[in-house]
Structure formats: C-alpha cells, structure tokens
Length: 136
Image (cartoon, rainbow, N blue to C red; front, side, top):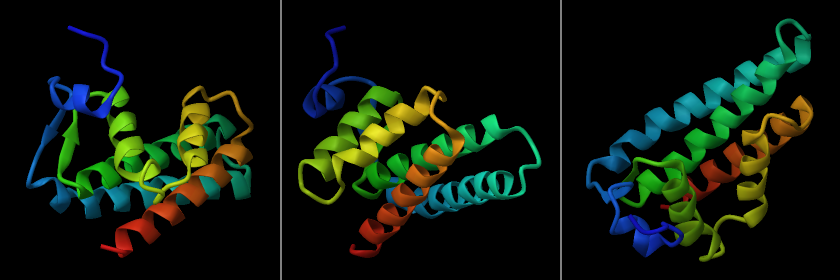
C-alpha cells in the first residue's frame, strides 16, 4: 500500500471511510472527552493518584475530540494517521481549528510533557471542539 499522507489517499485506503451514521456517535465521544478531562483535572488538583494519568487522560480527551470532529463530518477512521489528516483537512485548513491543537495532541501522545501542560492543552481543545460542534 502507498504511503498515506493526504486526505484523498486516506479515503482511498481502508483507514478512513464515509459513514452516514458517524454523526450520531459524536455525543458519546464528547461525553468520554469530558469524563477524561474531568478525571485528569481531579488528579491534578488533588495530587491523589499517578500524575502520569493526568497526561494519559488528557491525551484521551483530545483523541475523542479529534474523533468527534471527524465523525461530525460523516467519516469514520480506522487509523490514527488518517484521523489526524482528516481533522487537518476538514478543520485546520478551513480555519475552524488552530494548528496548535493538533500539535498539542501530537506532543501529548508522547506523554513526556508536564502533566499540567497536557491538561491545559486538553482543556483548550475540548472547549474549542464544543464551540465548533455548536456551530453546526
């Protein structure tokens, strides 16, 4: 299979498909994002628990936001790279989502940044995703 590095190539691959039922899953994805963000904030605030979980839960919140945005447009992903390319094509290039959110997601994926930074990035990403989804 060819290297998948564009939105059209993702659509030609098995890793991104059109799915008319995908928008119906957005609510559940955003609920999961909110739950993960709340759990990360609670651990960060109380200091009870493993601080690495703050980063992991923040990453999961951002991941669910990415999925919600792509699902809202009627697509489903089967691979992280195509999820990111789809979000970039559908939202970043159109000016709806700042590239900094995508960079924050990629940095959080490495789980090497301070937990508080990942939590702040996830909070901003969730907030912006809610704003975008509210614009329908």
